[in-house]
Image 1 (cartoon, one colour):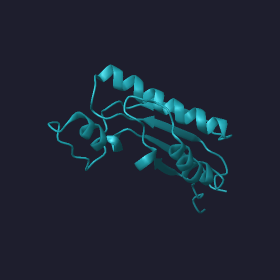
Image 2 (image 1 turned 135 degrees about the vertical axis):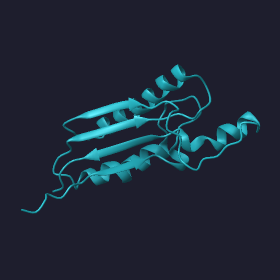
Image 3 (image 1 turned 180 degrees about the vertical axis):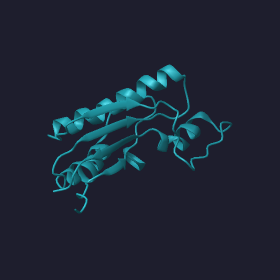
Length: 135
């Protein structure tokens, strides 16, 4: 028998939808990206077995602070998806803190702090992974 088609996908908030330094507030661009790249795709799923939402921070700041902040970012995305009616058998959130920098983001720690914060913006993100059978 043929394997069932899956509607598995991963989406990472990027560019202007990343989080403000030190904040866990989802901005309008982030909501728009979630609408277009997560909620719109959920319609092609017969069901969603797992939705894993992982928050990330940049490398500035202590481990504990970044861990808590990354968890808050994941929860902010979960709350938004919940408010839009996203349903999954299992929704899990986790924070990766500053442990998983975006490959290729190279920022010189010697540059002025404001420039460093701008340079590290791609790391302040949330990744949504969806797994389940397609319709």
